[in-house]
Each structure stands twice: as structure tokens, then as C-alpha cells.
Amino acid sequence: MLADGIQAAFTAGAVAELGRAGVRWNAAWGAGLGAQVAVLAALGESEEAGRRWRRQAQSGCPLLQSRIATARERLGTNEAVLVLPDPFRADGWLDSEALDEHLAPERADLPGRLRAAGASAHVALADLGTGSLGWFALAPAGPAEAGALLAAAATFAAGWGARRVGTDAGELLLLGGVGVVPTDAPPGVAAGPCDLVCGFPVPALARPGVAGTMLETVQRRDECLAAARVATWGGAPRLLAPTADAYRRWAARDNAELGVEWPLPSERNGELTGTLVEFGAAVARAALESGR
Image (tube, rainbow, N blue to C red; front, side, top):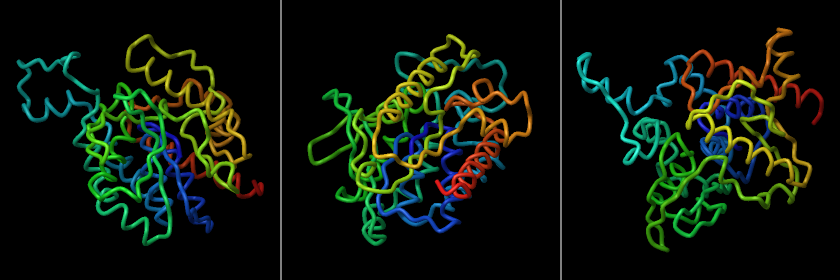
């Protein structure tokens, strides 16, 4: 399950629909906020992923609130105060407290719950200290370390900032997101039947409306990198990802343009969040009906 930020809503909808159809997973690999969806799938709670993101949609997607918006709320309605980010100290655009709250249910004794479910879960991370990319196993880690690794995996460049995580090897500075997915496919892709669920188009789709701002270009770059790497993975996994044709059919609009309307990870929009969940479910239903 690969997705950053709001794009995880698509993967949640797809995985929940597969779960309702009786699909179960005994091993999962995840990148970005899609790592949480992967963990829920491994725990046998795929439908909970869909419920979580539907609640985000109903409440206006508080998960993706910016640090500035949070600071303004704490300061009250005093319009005389101007809140600006410090680019030399801020580690991300989004509020990390909102992410920790969102991940709290999974962070509680995650290794024990995975062992009880007879499942394994790995997350993609970049170790910024050593300069390496890799898949980190959650079950062998202690409860606190596993929860910290999951939170680190959810972070992505220009979204939530990197995390310092204490491990047996010492303190690591880790960054997640789909942009750090290793070039080599996870072992499970070649081991047998598997589902590859991406919250972005594979291969990458043209986005003529991308602006030149840091937030958009960094997130778009990571999306392109992940799509290029995933496209080279062998093993013939069942790919569930947004496509222009599927989106046009689902939206029932001839002018529905995925490259224009598909959100970048840090976009905050409750209505759009709900749309992504339902579209992900529709893509999964189509795959099940076609026997793929």
C-alpha cells in the first residue's frame, strides 16, 4: 500500500472493499500514510481503514491541518497577530500532533497484535544518517519502536517532518513517504499472489496544472519517483491505482480529468477525501468483477 497524505484515502477505500469481499492478507508492505492502511489490512481490519477516512471526510479532514492553522487556533481570533513559518526550523508543513492522534490506535502494542494475527508488516523508510532506503519490519521491534517506525513511515517531504527514532542500533533520523520506496520490490511481490495498491497513477500521469511552489513540486517529484519504481516491479501483482479512464467512468463526466483533479498529498478538503474513498472502492469492485 503506497500513498502519501490524502492519497491514502483512495487506498483505504480500495482495501476496505477487498476486505468486504473476503480478501485477507498475511503480509503487508506500506509506504507513506498507506503504511497505516497496510497495517490494518495485515491485522484483518481493512474495513476499519475505510471507516477512518470516511470520518476524516465528514469532519473536514483535520489530519491534514497545517501547523499555521493550528497556531492560529491557539492564538484565538486576534487578527493583529501574523503567523509565519520559520523555514530554517520547521520540519514540515502539516501538524504532527494530528498525525500522532490519527495513528494512536495502531501504535498501541503493534508488534503483539501482528503476532496474534499471524501476520507481518514492513514500512519503507529512508535513514537520513546513513543515506540508505529500506523496508523496516514492525513485528520484531518493541511496542514503542514499532509505533515510532509507523509514524516515521507516514511522514513525507514537505508534509510531516522526519522523525528521530530510538532503535537497538541507536537513534535514527527517518523519513518516510512514497518517495523513499526502495528500487527493489518487496519480497512478497514475487512470492505469490499479492495486491499492489497505490494512491497515485502508475505510470505517472501528466499534471499540467502543477505550480512551481515547493510543496507541490516536492510532492509531485516523489509521486513520479514512486510510480517509476513500481512500474519496474515484476511478479505480476494485481495493481489497484487511479487511472484516467476509470476516473472518467466513475465520475460519469466526459470532462473528468484525473491529471487536473487528482490531489497532491497535502491538500486538505473533506469533500475530496470522501470522493477518494469511494473511487478507491469502485476501482476495487471493478477488479473483483473482472476477476483480476
